[in-house]
Structure formats: C-alpha cells, structure tokens
Image 1 (tube, one colour):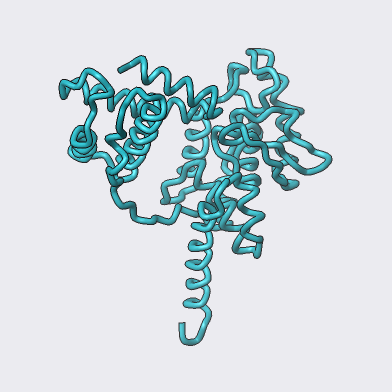
Image 2 (tube, one colour):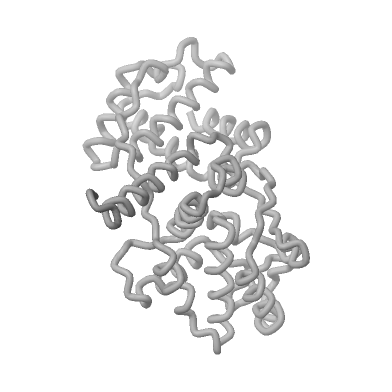
Length: 296
C-alpha cells in the first residue's frame, strides 16, 4: 500500500504543483490511515471497503481529534481513493459516500488597531534582532502574509520605490500586494543595519529575513516571535501570526475596502473564503451601534 501512497504524493508534487506544506500534511494524514488499515488486517488498498473508512473516522473521533481535524483527514482519504480509482488501482471508491463531520463556522480572532500597535512596539529596536523582529511584525500586518510566505520572501520581492511586495502563495501563485511606509521603513533599517551582519554567518542567500545563524527563518521562529511580543504587550488573547493576517483583512474592510480587493491581497482563490471577514465587520458594526445609538 505504501507504493500507492508514494505514487499519489508524486502526483500531488509534480502534476498538481502542491506546496511542500500541503504534501507534508497529506503524507502525515495518509500514513496514519494506512497504519490503521494494516492494524485492521487490510493488506491491499484495492480491498478497502466503506465500513473500513467509517471505522477510521470513528477511531479519529475516539482519539479526541476535533471535527476540523477529522474533516481534514477524511478529505485526504477521499482524494487518495479518488486518485486510486482514476488510476484503476481500485474498482470502486470506498470513501465517496462518507460524510465529513459538520463544522461550526467560527470567526477568526482579530485584534483592534490599538492591540496591533501595542505588539508592534514591543521589540527592543536598539538591538539587532529587535530591529529584525519589528520589521517582521510590521510586514505581517502590512501585507496579510501567511507564515509560509514571509519565510520565503526574498530581498528582490520588495519594491521599495513602488511600495509593493511580490508574494508567492499556495501552489506558487504570485500576487502583488501594497506595503505601507511604516513596514518599508523598518525593512530598510533591517537591511541597512542588521542583515549584513547576519548574512556573514550563514547561507541565507537572497532570503529577506534571516535568523541569528544567517539562515532562513523557520515557521516556528515566526510563531514564537509573534507569541512572545503579544505576551509582553499584556494582551490576554491567544495571538499567532494568522491573527495579524485576520486583523489586516478586517481593518481593511472596516475602513471601507472592496471585498474583491481584499480577496486579491489575501491570495484567496474563492471569494467565499474572504467573506468570513464580512461577518467580523458586521459584528464590529453591531458593537458600534450598541455603543453609540440611543436605542442600542
């Protein structure tokens, strides 16, 4: 069964041009699925039946996975079996009729502008790494980048004269996003005062943001930076890099930005993904009404 998994991952990488993080996620989820099938005595992927997939979903639920995690795992299983059916490895698709658990539509956490400002002011900018961290935080909030996008950002992707940044998102899709003056000023300070020192230690090449060893930063490093300064600012909210992305989108909409423009800047292929932020905006409007209207 493992050779079929390798074939599918090869298909995702070469034919679907899936991002490395996507392939890694499918590898993890489908490896767990195949281990389960082996434990159940299923040795050939073509012999998997619908009850086997149902038992796998039940096992995930018993193990305490959230409905969202179960849904992600089942989606990977469905895509895998669809591929196998198309390749004539299986005569029928045992996962096609399995329903994913219903997901509650939760609104993403959002910071208000004052809370964002408090986080941005926390890095100790008299220190080299403090300057770098300030530039990272400013860039995340100014552009709405994902973590995977900012760690791959190159010096040449920042157009300081034009005030834009070229971002390569999921599936290597390129988008051009404006970047404000504040973020550009901090990037400029970092490039002038800090990056030349860091680059002497490692092989970061053209990558914009480097760690103390001169190498490209990891996803976890960015998470830790955001979390550390959020805690230091005194915020009681659970803040992570995507919180700055959510805040970026929400503040644009609250300021009157067009939904399609926000979709373009976030790199969403489907506007329905962006529309979740209109719900946040409505909550903001309700709060304004409640606070200021005589009958609120």
